[in-house]
Image 1 (cartoon, helix red, strand yellow):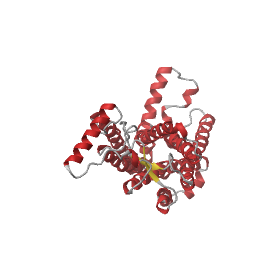
Image 2 (cartoon, helix red, strand yellow; image 1 turned 90 degrees about the vertical axis):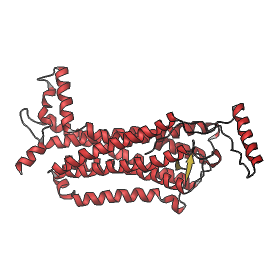
Image 3 (cartoon, one colour; image 1 turned 60 degrees about the vertical axis):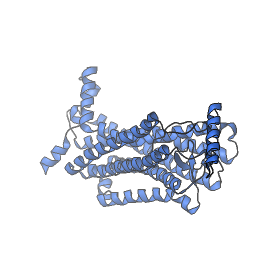
Image 4 (tube, helix red, strand yellow; image 1 turned 180 degrees about the vertical axis):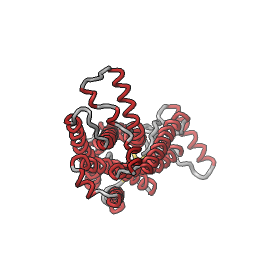
Length: 379
């Protein structure tokens, strides 16, 4: 989503505003130098190390998403199974959303950082750029969570009720579902445009988010509760659906007679493993920001923030940094947890453990066959 970098601005007082005459400029310069010598003021200047900290995650995220898009596009062109094609459509949309959500907010944050961020007195205020950046964070934050939930529900239906899934799930309905997800996230992100909540610059002045730390009102509390509630609910639904799918596949594998093969299940295993990876990544990366946001806005609205304000500022910055990594790690979940990679991992683990002929013998390399080629041959 974005990359934040540390710089010392929390102790910076207001910058003197120089007048048009040379005497005023000289006085302002002397005032700044005097404060600097006293250690009460640190001029905000982007450093080389700080710029690297901002640019490196952006570059890594862009490369990761491009590689995943290339693999997904190639797999989608070769795929002949409708259930797999639906999953690939969801996965491609997720990666595209992550890519755009990494570039747009990241570029805005980089611009703010290079300009030194906003002044401390402008924290918890908003302007046009802040509105766009805050809305982008909410939109590109909710979309992956909604998509992960929809993908988990679709796979749960495909694993537990394959006949019903084949009659209900089509490419057209999948595209309608994706459009509904983007529209729902956009509606939530635009609520502040109708005075239903507000965005504000957050400490250290290089990013914007929902107002949670100062001057919060009832609409701000409602907005954060809606945002965090939708995000946490999506994670919970995905957890339930993936658990059901995983247990169903494990039971089916245990009940299978030795020597029999069911290549169709290999697709389900691959997709569920990838969904579990996406879910775990989303939970680790997004739960802190969703929970910290709720805690902060409730304490701020109740006037109970007090001396804990600096601690909550730190928690919010940590939360948004973790959320940023979700868009970097999501593509690698698909890249690394493909059937070919899983098969190699299985073979390596089996050779190392030396468990031939044991219960693990049920999970043979044929559990992950190249059924794509089989499907093409049948055609």
